[in-house]
Each structure stands twice: as structure tokens, then as C-alpha cells.
Amino acid sequence: MNTLLFPVILAGGKGERFWPLSRKDRPKQFLSLDGSSRSLLQATADRLIELGGGESSAVLGVSPMSDWRTRTGWDSLYVITSSQIAEGVRQQLPDLPVENLLIESEGRDTAAAVAWTSLEIKQRYGEDAVIGFFPADHWIADQEAFAHTLSAATQLAASTAAIVTLGIKPTFPSTGYGYIEQGEKIGSFNELPAYHVNRFTEKPNRETAETFLSTGRFSWNSGMFVFRAGVVLKELHIHAPEIIEPLEQHGPDIYPQLPKKSIDYALMEKTNLAYVLPVDFGWDDLGDWNAIERLLKTEESPNVELATHVGLDTQGAIIYASNPEDVVVTIGLEDVVIVRDRNVTLIVKKERTQEIKQILKILQSDSRFTDLL
Image (cartoon, rainbow, N blue to C red; front, top):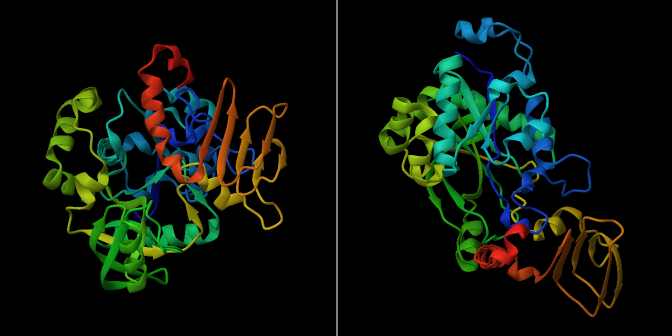
């Protein structure tokens, strides 16, 4: 049985809550938000290609079309993205094989992306191919612990009819993440305990989140999954035939007609084959501008400054300017986000950054502002 992992990067998101830095021509996954020179997409690829081996695909017993060269980290890596930003993905990841870039004609959320990619990998490598899906825009602190976790998830998926999700051990009662409740322990893999999933929950209120943490049974839903191709395709036939059957019959040409559903809603909340590995490798989904503070805040500075900033009586601010020649001057501000990019300046209270999506809808409805999106 194939115990190597085929990692897939989900790179079709818009990252609207990082506007105005994130725009249609430069989505969030193309940005560098941690002060490094690598974009989020490139950093994700860097982590995942280290998991790919140099083992010949012929050893795996895969189809003839795939055994013409030695499998390397790049050969194993897949990316699925939208047609609007596919060229940007090629520029960001020039070593990615052309055949490993799947381009959606129209975004239909993660269920369709998982279904199509799983079909492609099954066709090339067989139904026992172990696949992992990873968002393009997450931050991981400890690469060694991350690799150790994925080894455990791969072992579980290869040996069991399982859809494995990585549950992040919560560090505070977040109301911004979904939660996974663990049930019966089924064993340990690579020295990490694995549990059957009792249920997935939507983003809770503060009181419910505090209750979740007090039980010790809940973890954050990271949106990362590992499974065998044949297992997930069978479960999609049971729980989401409206997505998998048209793809099998018509291929990706049917994409615009597929229902728009997340993999959580279409499958994970319904399947009886969901298992969770509660893990801790330092993680953030970088959901909005407040994530920059979680990553970069230091005790020495009252603000997080990724800009030339001159401030008087300003604290708890997140300040970003894409042009180093732009100077941001503040007086008497507290707990705000200030972003200056090209022809737009955003000023918002940190507690209201989730409402950036609402302002984008207003801008979209006015022809004067469409070039700002």
C-alpha cells in the first residue's frame, strides 16, 4: 500500500479580509506577511515539498503514465487554483510541474476542489494514493513537528478507511474558528493519539468556546485533511453525489455547474469516517489583519509596524505600508489597523476587521471603485 503523501495546496481563495493589500490581481496567498521574502503560497510549498521523497514511482506500483521519472518533492506536489490567478501561481512556483497545476474555470469552494484533485490523483497513482489538502495561506511555526504530524496522519490514512483532520490544540477560547470534538481513542500513530470525531461545530460564541476548552475534548478545525483517494471518493459518492458524479461523467468542463459547498459542509459533517489528530506545531490561519499582531508583536514595541511610522500616544496599532517611502503619522490612536497600499488607505478598529468584506461589497456596487478591488 502507498504510504507516501501527495500534498495538495488549496490556492483559490481571495483573502478579502486582508484588503487593500490583498486584491484580485494579488490575493492573500501571494503576500509576505511575516516579514520574510517568501509569500504565503511559497512558504506552504516549501514546507510540503520537504515531505516528498525521491523514491521512484515505479516502486509504488502506479500507472505507466506516472512512472516515467523519479518522484521528487515537486513531482508529488499539486496546486489547485482559479483561472484568474493561475499565471501568478506559475510565477510564484516555477518548479511546479505543469500537469500538477489544476485550474478551476470558476471557484466552487473546497468540496469541488477536493473532489476534482482526488479524481486526478487516483487516475495517475491509484486509489490507495494518500492525499493531503492544505490551505495556501496558513502559518506554521514548527516545521519538524508539522512533518511529524503529517507522518502520523499518513500512517492512519494508509492503514484505515479514514478521513483524517488535523485539530489544533486551542490556546484561547477563539470565536473565529470552528471546533472538532474528539470521541473514542482509536490508537496512536507516530506516537500521536488519534480519535474518532464526535462532531464538527461552527464558530461558537465566547461562552460556548470557553466551555469547549474546559472539557479538553475540543480542538480548532485547521482545514487540513489526509486520506486515501479511494476512501474520500467513495464517501463523496455517498454524501455529495451532486459534486462527484458530474465530475466523473463530464470532467472539469462541468465545473461552473457544480454546487458551491465547502468540504466541511458537503462531507466532513456527515461522514462516519472522520478522525482527528489533536496537534500543536504553532499555527495561525492568518484570517485577518489581527493575525499580524499574533505573529509579530513584541513586548518592546507598543505597536506592530510594517511601515515608516511616526506616532504620538499611539498603542496597540497594526500599521502597514507597501511603499517604504510612505510615512504614516498617528496621534492618540489605540487598537486600530492602518493599511496604506497604492491608492487606498484603510483605517479600522481591530475588533471590526471582519467587516472589511462588507465594505468591499459597497465598493463593488459603485463603478468608481471597481479598480480598487
